[in-house]
Length: 497
Image 1 (tube, one colour):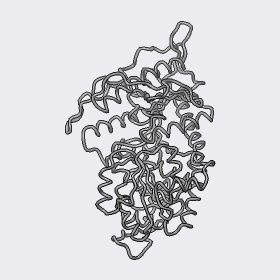
Image 2: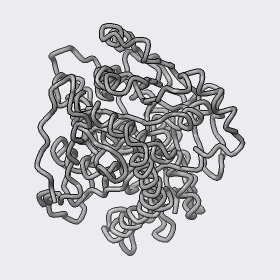
Image 3: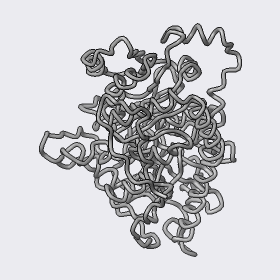
Image 4: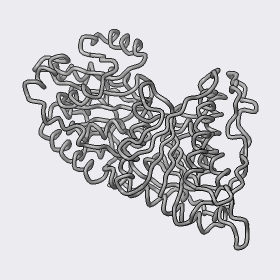
């Protein structure tokens, strides 16, 4: 089986969580005998083409000067499409007359696109070579912005709709994302497969690091008696750093030795000003960007990790803390309650509620034995549920299903007596070459390339999303751990059985 993955990021180019996801998934698939080809964007210092740990990598450069980000995405997809053409034709092979051979039913080739940023190359490749397309949507424009509010968001939302429409199957990372794609994109419930993300716990093992060296490293961030609350992520509203800073005064009023360490690059002046306004700037340490080597050490010296997101399709950072054996306190936003089980593998609190978050942090800081028990259970769940061998096996099952349905569909394979060779003339212009001009309140005009109709596929019945059982409902926020709170407590909802 040959998989051609299309993504705008892959290590060492890391913009968000997609790069690490594709890296780990590709290696796990390779370990199970799948031949993986990744076509992605160039990165300074990275080879344009190489085979790394058995993964075939092709890094391409956008050609032309982009007027804006969307235009740059189109230019990148032009380059990805051009390189993918040569790759696919090499994989398909030619007959004695030089004509391109059709897909071989016994030797699958499947396209796998990640998010809307790869749609403009993936869809034309699907139609030109009549190959099945699988897509993974990691997050939606609707979810990131709590709705669609302007023309550029409307445009991206439309491209996401096109991608899920072109895909034979759509992979999402949580049941939350399944519901979101159904709501925001109209994706049929039975067209989607839920496959969790994973993490490799061995990367958090630092066998050569002694206690003395760790203590010296920790001293850069805190005094020996201080307890470190940790956050890592982008400094954007949806990640909820502002809620964590707002919660710190209450935490410190009952646990004076608490200190917050915030790791991540990007604009943070508004957060610095917030900490100063609350009078806690001495107890909030912004590190900026931290290389992976130091980040792994930080996980070894912190006392609790907190991720109070307002929107989170999955929450890979919470999973990484669990793999590092660190107690976690998260919000109940998005897919986080599916990753962190309240009271069992961590603590969940109300999203956007600083009082609830403070109580959750205090419950961990004041009860270290309970915190350790939850951290142990969380690590076990990483080994059994969120491991890449399982995830690769589930993903390969999706590929097998798609290829089986595809070979039986009659779309790509010629009828008896028909000419077998593929016409290599382009099926459609792959991507738009002009910039996408987007006025603040005007929908883009002629921004979307004309795409051929998707092939007829077996009809799938659309059914309503099943009601979630109690285990998948967001866990209630923790009860306040102290009676004398400095802010009003939130009402605790009735317990679900």
